[in-house]
Amino acid sequence: MNKQMVVGRVRDLEQRTKVLRQQAGSNGSQNDDDTLWMSSLDIIGELLSMVEELVGESENVGDKMQLACPNCRSVVAVSYDAVADAAVDCPACGATMLLTNPT
Ligand SMILES: [Zn+2]
Image (spheres, rainbow, N blue to C red):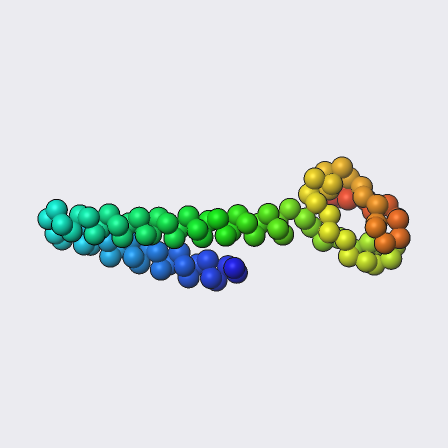
């Protein structure tokens, strides 16, 4: 799921929430309250599934950064936990890569 898809789905939910608010404001009869309630549950459910998807994706790709080995040029995925340790061994050539931020 890319960023534009997320923005599009959020916009859609915003629009549906807006319609619900207008309906809730314009008529206050009991029968319509049930419909409004179910519609708002729909929106909440969709929002939750979207958040679930986002969290699932960030677990797959979000905890690693790509580094190029200065010795053999192979690209290595290093977890941010390892970055905190300042150095990691290249799995291709065994050279030690320094991960400390020079700033
Ligand atoms: Zn290497």
